[in-house]
Length: 265
Image (cartoon, rainbow, N blue to C red; front, side, top):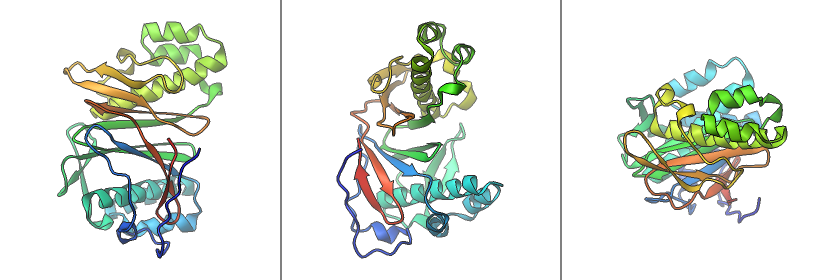
């Protein structure tokens, strides 16, 4: 991964929204969302610096996890999301409020209603997508060839997709299945449909990384969704689905503990 690092000078390690005032933060535009890759293996002392910006409910939800790793991942994901949205909203991160829409998808209240977001995490990474004037879904999958079987492919793909992938050698089938699944999950999460949208009825490109570059998916309600693969780290598959036109999927890496970023794709 390559890019240009832009550090923020004169900042304490505490990630409050005032730390980002001088940062030229990449912002979403209509038809061009932005995506943030967040490492989940930061030291506990770093992750705890995000706790002050969480709401009481978010802190309580994180405390319910029995494993330290899961608890820290919850704090980190919500903390980084709040910092990003606070910058885009021009508000303090701790003051942001959320509610769940009709299909259970979180959304901002008392802010810019045009701003949409979605979060995914797998393995050692989290992924955040932010868009303007368009619903968005993201998914991130750690590729684990040992978990993939032909029965699994038939259970989560359309009959045609399963036929094509099951004819491949096992390692290639495993890689492509993870990419297909990331695309399907991004579509499902973008719709906010949860279990009401069957992945076996959603057709996506069958190729490896890069196969979904502006591919259009039609939903039964008539909406056209743009599907893009995201430049995931090695060993991962990632994709986004955006309601309407989308001109690309620029990815930036969030750096701890300050608010630096690196453009990586």
